Amino acid sequence: MTHEQIQDRLGEWLDGELDAAASAQASRHIDACAECKAEVARLRRLGTALFTAPAAADPRSTEAFVARVMGRI
Image 1 (cartoon, rainbow, N blue to C red):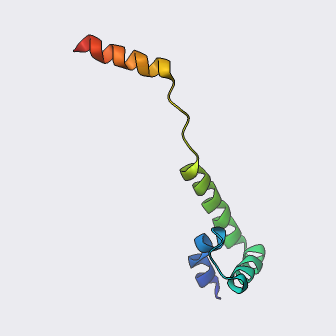
Image 2 (image 1 turned 135 degrees about the vertical axis):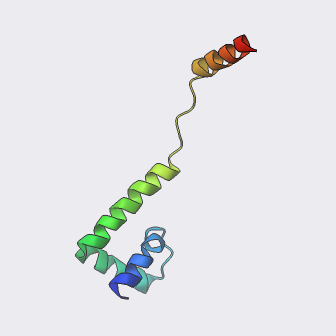
């Protein structure tokens, strides 16, 4: 695969969707390519941000919000 082809498939590589040969080829390329290594790091940070559950709302702030709304009604 070329550099561009590997860049196009970095998401698949991260998700383990490439066959063994393509995955090995991509891994070797990523190890040697600073640009692809940086892109992998960016994609991992993005994945963490997207797939990390948000903190549960504090029930006290929810109750206070409801009380303010009800007070205005």
